[in-house]
Image (cartoon, rainbow over all chains, first blue to last red; front, top):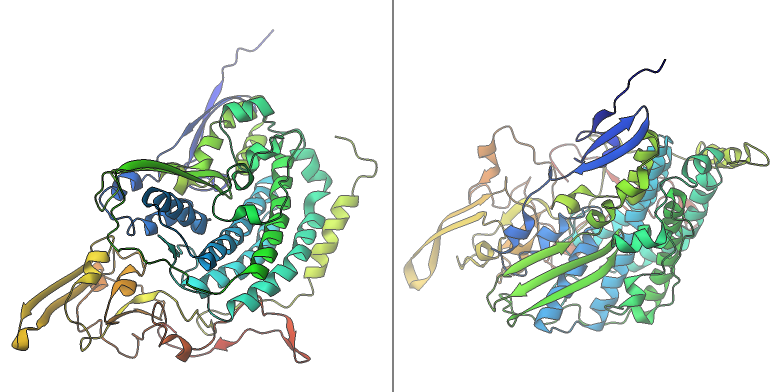
Length: 367
Length: 181
């Protein structure tokens, strides 16, 4: 005799510790096996794209801080690059190097958060997160020294950066760069060979290469699936063509590969930081740009490799002081579209870690 | 997934955890002990210098949120006299654009950081409240003249580092009680 059963619909979120923000997943379950996932977004919608249409180009920079608040510097960077492309503004050499230094520091900081909370979702409650926060804290100290804020930096300006670095910045950064590889080894030793972590992540939440390309995934999620695509190499912006670094690529596209790619990217970021600090020239940090910038009529799409993937800004100018259209291509929203394919057939606990391995930031998804 | 010898990876991780057992804690007992903040901190609200302000309202125009309200009239010698300088800090996002844009350095970010109030009305600051006082001191943000006079920021990178044969196991702290700084 068989018992008649029916699928169970579970609302995961919006207030759930493993959703990294206010995000709801409408999960259809057969027992404990995931049959269907429907993401529900919009809880953190602030209408930044619309707000930006009423503000000048400079006034929009603080708003970009509030997109991916774990990587504010790279948001600033993407936006100012797009505006500079639109208005045809050149950037002083020193400012280019400072931007690269800040972007790579931000990448390390964001990946530390991503890896820490991925392990937290796996059940290694808080210990790895706090180990990684120690290094993140050092970076936040440095950001605070440069621009006076620890989360919403508002550091980049159209035509350069807002301030030159103080004199105690470079010695502190050099110490950090010298110490960091040792700490990354420590993270590797902590959990990379742990049998429980391996059993739970290897082969779980696989995103095949063709599907990753078809869903327009980018960043570590795409590279974990075996696609060697990094905008720093594929479409070099700023001065990334001057640096020597590798692009770590995964093989299977499972949760472990995404974790591994992030750890390796931190090592590469440290390498870029070493080179950038050594080459840093003297000089001006900001070009002379008129406060009420009026770019010529036209449209532009500027994109960079943010820690979480390809972050793009699409701007349309009508020769006024405010953008006519301000559109953001957030990396995690696009990466999230692949979630359903990754988790169907797996258990609820695997849904949590697969979601954690994408490394979403809801400020960016809902914007 | 199968392993040859189960438990080796767990043991390796435990070695790291065990090493951390003998580390000095870096926790700071916050209200009594305080870390020294950055010289450029964009801290508590704004400091306004009335003698330098000409009432040009560049700060009000540069504010993305439109928080700064300035009312002026033309007084003696054809100069603007500021009647009202009011900042709604409840909507302020501390971007610092007003301070950067001020051509006369009449505005600076504050250095203190505790800004909880009981009423929303108390977050709207009038021109008397915005002036220099014990709790409202300027920070070095976009003010290179003030920056060197402020104490050096405590950095976690320096923590546990040898300097001149001496181990810096504690961060430089300010033990001053009271609001901010």
